[in-house]
Length: 399
Ligand SMILES: C[S@@+](CC[C@H](N)C(=O)[O-])C[C@H]1O[C@@H](n2cnc3c(N)ncnc32)[C@H](O)[C@@H]1O
Image 1 (cartoon, rainbow, N blue to C red):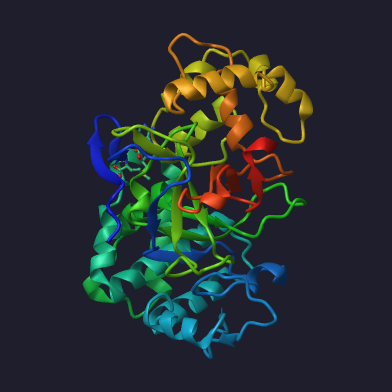
Image 2 (tube, rainbow, N blue to C red; image 1 turned 90 degrees about the horizontal axis):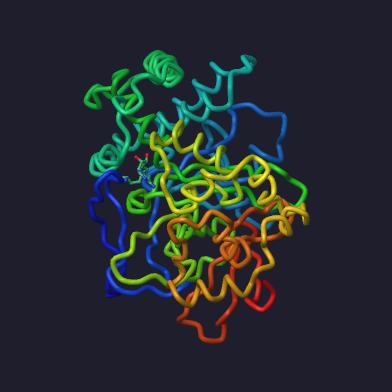
């Protein structure tokens, strides 16, 4: 059995967090996690067939011509194989979930309601369906961060919850009474989803500026990672990729970006690392309910707007790199050697984290992914970095 590399612990002001149990090496896999809920990120009705019809309704693999496609005889949802369909009918696609999605789809037909609301409705059906099929997984969902008190002044969240609750109680019948379906429970579940769901992206395309999500997943252990704007670990998913080392294509893998010492908190970034200071702060405050005080934010809080523009990480924009001192490899290397990859010092107000963007940010057009070394268990791959969005490989010499 693999010995654990990380442990969950409470950190004052940050809630539950993951810390390193021993020194960890760049590329090490520290977690493989399976979703307790996985649901579609698409509207109920779309003219864009490319979208709605391209993924298996259970495991969200891209359905290709070669796949042994089957479909639900009631709602016509597609599945990549008979096996996937049969797993779904006992888990994510029970008769109750199938009927509920049909009726909610009928309700949304021709109404042009916001996509967010439709996705939230899909999540609530998945969450109540989880309560039907596995009380223990439902309790795990309830134990994750997110409560109505933490965002009680959020009137948008309140009205979405009221709308979805009345929709579900009207059309998703019969509602299993033992679930105790209520507006309060719906609000709590939506809060959990907002704080913990991971977006699983569509295949990377250079042409697409916005990274679009094909499905959202709630991963019970990965939900304990806190955020840092210069993360030391990142998440890989392989929905369409090689499944050989994974139990299922829906597992996610968390890998170290660089070395860290024992006891260090392991953090992910909750969004692409190229976002500017004000955008990051806004998202973290509005969506996650906290003020980020990470080393990068402490430095960037003192920047003027022109500094921010200078460090713009737009990977189409070569000027941004120059103005942001991105060429200073020497300083970068010195800092890396000295600090195990954790380099910011109090009082530095220039751009000391340039090393991160140079080494760990993918520069492919419209990618914004993070690069992490391949696992050290394969010596032939030393120095090879993999991007967690476009999947491309780069040798350290290339960056
Ligand atoms: C996905 S959960 C992470 C685990 C969470 N700390 C817990 O106790 O379950 C996201 C929530 O963790 C907290 N959090 C994450 N990163 C943080 C940070 N850098 N500083 C303070 N709180 C943070 C916020 O409350 C955020 O909404």
